[in-house]
Image 1 (cartoon, one colour):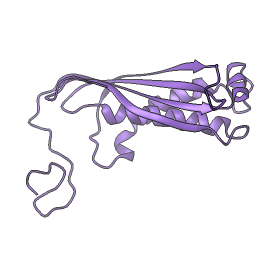
Image 2 (image 1 turned 45 degrees about the horizontal axis):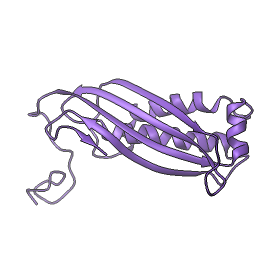
Image 3 (image 1 turned 45 degrees about the vertical axis):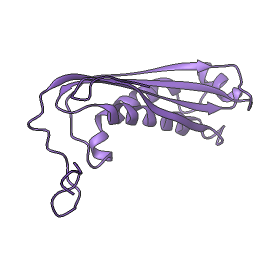
Length: 162
């Protein structure tokens, strides 16, 4: 099992040692979608969700999610993130299933020895979950979907673009 990076010589899980890796500037961008009934999006846009400003709360939650990633994902290194930004795109035209959507984009940056892909993905997922939580009283059928890494830069493996 010596060639598997997350296992020790006894075959048990370990956190990878990155102490010999060079610190580089790294970024990751992840996206996701929350599909919902048109009335739900209308109420978000009009500020008529009982729990408050949905996108403002989801934005803060996404940032917090990025910062707390190593508390949730066992093998993630704690990182001193240098930037986290969450943005939203509203899709008010119903799709073929009659659903509107809110798109989420999380951009995370760090100067460090390991990447921030997991932080960007976690930020996206937490923002999506927050939208669901804030709107579930009126739309339990919302769908969280398409959470994926769009781009990452820096590190030994270089740039990845979906």
